[in-house]
Image (cartoon, rainbow, N blue to C red; front, side):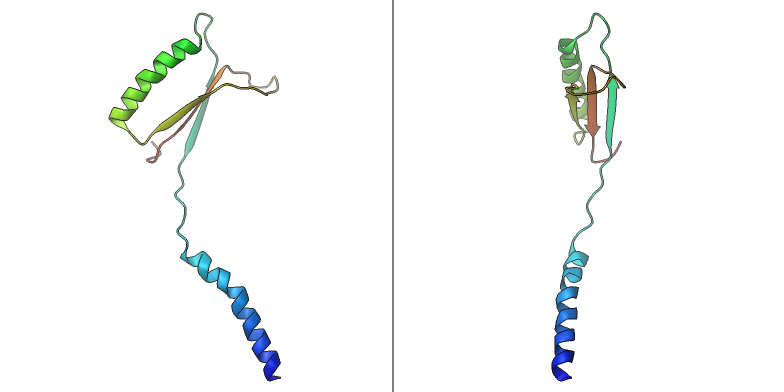
Length: 95
């Protein structure tokens, strides 16, 4: 009976140890991400967007240095929701 009690106690302690570790971990910070999609006007292209991106980067650095953004172009897609460029943005403040 004593061996059985020790075995059960050891099993419980071994099973509970990950719970103690999990409780000590910090909760991750949640940061919202936004996605905008658009298509170029007939007389506009990537070069025009690059000029705008440089202006925005300068403004963002001055007003909210925590904001990061990426432009993407779709490579594989269905005919649903066609777009030329996507803008992904995220900032620590969520604004």
